Length: 418
Image (cartoon, rainbow, N blue to C red; front, side, top):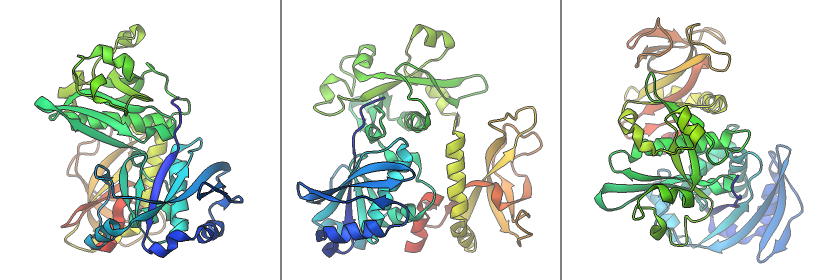
């Protein structure tokens, strides 16, 4: 387990006059129904207090501060031009600093809820820990949801390019989760998106483990083909340096004061023997197979989270379906053939095209007509192009393609901006 850093966010209110009142901030927090606060204490120009949520206590610091929009931060969401102009004019925000508890995703969700309680109307939130800029509208939607945001929001993966197409991938934000930041060295312009998927899946899986993954311990991530599986691990970057050329991008000379503490490099174990002997191999050994649409493992908890969010925001998708210009895909969890099913993994999740919304036929009746877009792996009686009637409660995810953009349950707030 890596040393845990505090989570830093900066909230920018729509109304700048709300910035100057600590009493207002505390009163709004005290009025919140989802958490309780302790007595605030003044310290170094800010306020410190305890927030109780879900049976756990969190230490919180509120600190007004001046800021400039960081140039290198990733803009995570769409912003209308009027909001961009207002953000550029803003000069002050409220720092909301919190140490995460036992569950990083729950802690992150709470931090958004705290910000939303203090500033019901906000232009943006700068997540300094992950170097992201979040839409105020998205934060509102996420904070009011009973379902936590996707794990990928807790961190950012940056791709640094060098000469000859070389790419160094590294994360920001995992230290606040008690994890090392993760890296992939020796990537390139052709394969870095595939390597990004490996790093993202590794980060998400590590956050969900009941016990911390030890350095060198294997973790199953994906099925790359019928017979090849991706098993990865991590080692401290200083140890990893001995396995690469000294002048590799991301080497000792490229780190300056950053990326030197609590950061680790990903490797693969192609065989059981490699793991037993501690033999580390670059993930690049699988580059050609990574082109073939590998199946990355989603844990049961993440599948349930995605399903809960898709169901919670189903009305957005139904309204979008009323517009003939929109194209909608729906992922359904369908029962596997008995020869494949297992107690902990009895459904295959596959994509369909929504063809027609049908009249409701009771709580569990068929509700829509859909066409299968892909060939299933584990359901022999179903094939690409097959049409069928399905229930809303079978949905585990959905996508809306409008003439302007692609929307997921995560970012449906954009429908209200069109």
